[in-house]
Amino acid sequence: MSGLARFNREKRVIMNRCGRIDPEQIHEYIADGGYRGVVEALCQPPEALIDLIEAAGLRGRGGAGFPTARKWRFARVAAGTDKRIVCNADEGDPGAYMDRTLLESNPHQVIEGMLIAAIAVGATRGLFYVRAEYPLAVRMLTQAVEQARQSGVLGKNILGSGIDFDINLFQGAGVFVCGEETALIRSVEGYRGTPRHRPPFPVERGLDGRPTVINNVKTLAAVPPIVENGADWFRGIGTADSPGTAVFSVVGNVAQPGLVEVPMGVTLRELIFDICGGIPKKKKFKAVQIGGPSGGFLPADFLDTAVDFEALTRAGAMMGSGGMVVMDEDACMVDVSRYFLEFTQKESCGKCTFCRIGTRHLLDILRRLTRGEGRQGDIDQLETLSRAIKTGSLCSLGRTAPNPVLTSLAYFRDEYEAHVNENRCPACVCRVMTAFYIDQEKCALGCDTCYGRCPTDAIFTSSNRKKGIDQSLCVKCGECSVACPAVYGAVIKISPPHRVPVIERPPESRF
Ligand SMILES: Cc1cc2nc3c(=O)[nH]c(=O)nc-3n(C[C@H](O)[C@H](O)[C@H](O)COP(=O)(O)O)c2cc1C
Image (cartoon, rainbow, N blue to C red; front, side):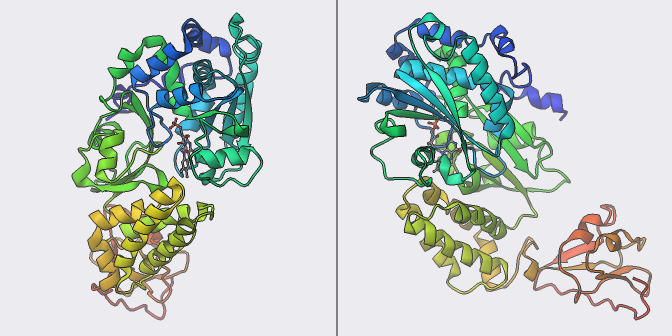
């Protein structure tokens, strides 16, 4: 499928203007219909605005899919003045860059969404929480806020309406847990960014003790198109329970990785194969991980699952904020689970015991398994610990961190059993349980490609002018296998019970 055909399958609502207008020119946004939503919002009572968002069925794109109108209504009726709107642009999931792209390429749509939220809620101050690792997004936002001020859409007496609303920017230090709304608030207030028990929810007592709406970048960017086009238009896209579109960053073993915006309800098969071009190098699809580092793995049997909040949760994954990692047949699910646990364990803030110590234990077991040091009882312990962490953790970081372990155990249990019972890695990924050798029949030319890539000089020329691998020097990096031309495919990976054929290294070997 060509690149253009791929775009024909997308439906752009949130990213509609990205790449079409110059993000540094407010006039381009206005000329394209931008800030019309604010004018319409100012012409109706705030309650009607919230009713409109409710009728559209907009749900938060920050992970949990919480109904946006309900959050706004709570904040509107909350006692107190000087209410706040916070745009959560922390986006800490590894490999995810949906929010960053949106802020870099169309900051005004997010500002407009915040402004409409402020009118609906009765807020006077807004805040962008952006991680400092997003310097271009910070620059674009700073510039866009200043332009909006100069154009009269931010500041005192917006567009002559008598309403005041201004926005500041806060740069987060790049800590995953600070994307959690209560940790975010503490981080802005100058404390260590750790979550706290709720209630009170931020809509009652948020930033500086004021009622605060915290919405994701994409949620806010979806608001202006709804105000302009109406609730029925938005409901006409996606599914009954999850109207609208979803933006995913699809990475991993797909032919065309990148950002895609699709109507909710498309299947994983359509997304991965029709839109992103399927699995490269004629490999088989093995699993997809959806929902960021603590999302679940779904195997091939689930390819016809619809991409929406409920269907993904039912299948054991979650929508999350839109990270999607595709894996082909070469992935070891034990090793991939270890990889994601490394991230969540490192990012655990340490405030609650289940998350702090539980994820540490989970990671220790997974590391042992990938080192070939599995013990009887490990699988049971992984399951027990995972359930305890899910139940006992304070915030969703801990409550979701075991998902990769639980779903890989549910769908790829045989791989765990092979690691524990047979000291074998079926995908030949875990180094200790893997060996490489060169098939003498397939090594047709005896070319030096593999030799040139070997970092430890383990490759030698055998007496029949073919190549061989000195097992005592091989560090199992797999570079030779990558280097060997695909037509030969002479470098073979094996795991027990297979044994490496012995190829003698001639004493006079040149290499
Ligand atoms: C560990 C953790 C990290 C989070 N990171 C983000 C984030 O980067 N961006 C985001 O919008 N929400 C994040 N959330 C969810 C927020 O707590 C909150 O639910 C969200 O910002 C609400 O916005 P929405 O209603 O528009 O979805 C995170 C939650 C947790 C538990």
